[in-house]
Amino acid sequence: MVHDARFYFQHPYLRMICTLLVVFLNFLIYAEDPIADSSQVCSIPVLGNVFAFVFSRYPPNAWSLLKVIMWLLGILVGIIAGKLCHVFVFNRWFRLKMFANDEGSWMTMWFSTIISVYIFSNIYNAFLLTLGGTSNIPYLISMQMGIKNSTFMKMAATGTWLGDFMTAWMVSDMMLQERLYPSWNRFIRQWWRSGYTRIVMFWLLLISLCTTVITVICTDIIRWDYLNRGFAPSNELSRAFLAASILSLDLLIVMQDWDFPNFTNSLDVRLPGVAKAIYAFDIRIPDWFKRIVDDDVWTVHITGKWFNYGVLFVVMCLDLNMWKNQMIYSPCEYGQYVGPYGSIYTVHNETELALVDCSSDNHTLNYEYRNQTFAPDGETLLSKDIWTHSRYTGYPLYVKLSSFLLSLTAFAVFGALVVIFGRYSEEHRDVYQGRMKKNRTLNNLLVRHSVHSLDNIVEVEGEANAAAAADAVAAFKPSTPLKSTVSDPGVQRLKRLKKMKLSDRQHQRQEHRQKLMKRAAQYCSCCVCSSRCCCCESRPTDGAASGQGPAAGGQTMDV
Image (cartoon, rainbow, N blue to C red; front, side, top):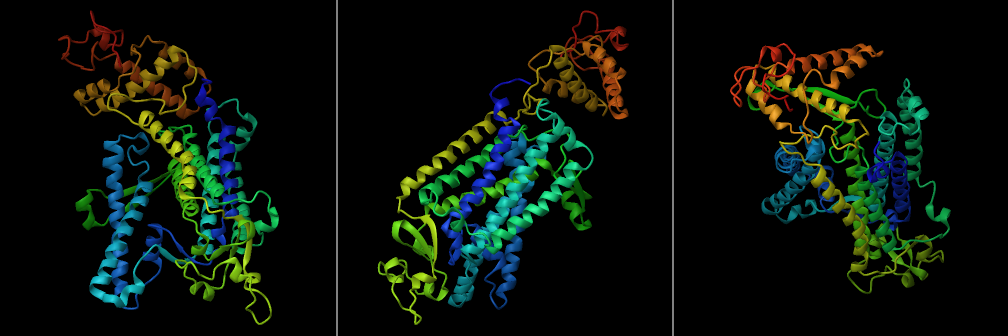
């Protein structure tokens, strides 16, 4: 292994530290965020509109049917638009390797569906106002989700925990399955790959940890304010920096992947909790739809890389929303007020919250008013409110925006690496697929390239298309000229491998590659023409046709 900067940046120990740190920081910001105690209605741009459009605010008349038709149509349009964006924008225009073929299409369609449903919700609002009049105003779709902030924060914390757990497990599981760092934890990797160890451990930890964590989140059995006792209380600025740090660490986890920025791996790295690397299932297409798509079935593939990072990108959206909350946080908007030393108090009485007008300077949601005695039992309104150690100090917006510089730097580095190393061209193919190069001798490196090239030649030539075979060889231009003669050291290497105790499948693969190398010697000396050469106007000699060498006066074939 080449011990360069990338070797240490993607080291297994550093990757595990980053994933575990994200889990801890997500729990910390959820515990410190005062919005998690708010009883006001949750409002989120775009996602709030989509949630309300699909799950709430249904009119009591025939408008409900229109609403269902509209969001179903929005989902369909979003899926089609996402697939077109994946094919024409990411694959053909940007030429990103991570989106080659159908890779990443599910995540692209998921994001495009969110945007499409949001657009259709605004169209639905226009129908309600234009055709329904003012009587349908209560059913207009807005960014208010119709649930409390405390409820949404519990849902977000649960989803974040599940996403972080899957990310941490996928990162650890992949590193223990692969051999890119051969000297790292050999005994543990051998034990991990033996039998059903990794499968049993996944389901055992998933059930036990998720049951415990979700119970603590949903029932509030453990109160963070009673545990930390005011140790290092946070304010809106420190919470903004914490949310930005989590978002940066999420990007760092993606960049530390051994296959970044290509996300293509020929190794059979199995999905978590199962014994397969790829799950595929077929969807039968109706006869009336076959005329459009010209296919009988659609095969859906689920791979480990995009399964992992698709979940992580959803978690990043939740972390970005957490950062947004700290930017626009105002205690009154969330049914809260500030007490002595900047401590935050939360009001849970919905009747009292409905009477509060935060736009007025004389609203009753303040410490002086709540500390007066109004209850018949002699207790103050303050005694019924929830007090937290979290602080609010009133930092201006431009100061809080400085916290996002860290995330902007991470996004800039991520985009630069993808643009520089994650794009492919028609004239270059990277056999390493973005991975770190191992220390190999020149002979082994040449054999690796030559066998890969010969596979492409014979694969196309087997279709009785010599011109297409010539294009396949011309498209592959490695930096070092490679020889395809049978007398290369590659033949000796294949003979040595044949003598080793290999499995039947590996033995057949080596024999197949040796046949490919022999067949390559039958071609012309300067191209792959099997008849008269279009370049040197010569024919292959009998020696070249019999595998004894290139044509007289010619050169060895460079592939």
